[in-house]
Image (tube, rainbow, N blue to C red; front, side):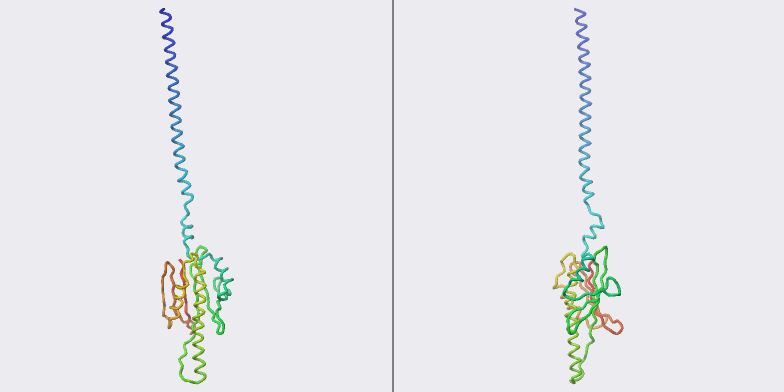
Length: 228
């Protein structure tokens, strides 16, 4: 009996020892699973952050997309196809054009534009202003000169309105520049009387400047739209 009891005790000891080993192994296994789960969750959390960073546009891209001016290629295509006036490249520069509008009398203007980061940043139109004629008598010559001066002035006004009314909205990539605003600017520009007079207006981020200048004895009306 004594030997049997000793044998049973030995077996129980072995069983308890095995149970402890199995329990320890299971504990290590579950702890390992828990750590792996936390690592996976961290990786999944980090992934959207990387994606978000990748999807965020650079400052240069944001600046480009916020530009009000159309791409230069779009603008030059417009100049080649518009029916509001004729546009011929000038020999004074690749971004200089001679614009012609109207008939009898025909009015010529000069176009200059600037580009920033591939987009049109400013548009300038220079139109020669006909000299005023003060009627001094009632002879046929006086009447002719007076009437001709009036026709030239009206033709210049009509040409400026036609050119700016078509050109300025075409340079606007946002399609926010209204024809009524352009007409108002053109009318105000034509009211300038002498060299040194100027008119400025800002509307929704668009800045317009017009002023009278004198070059080689010829008065010039200069109109500029800034798109940046």
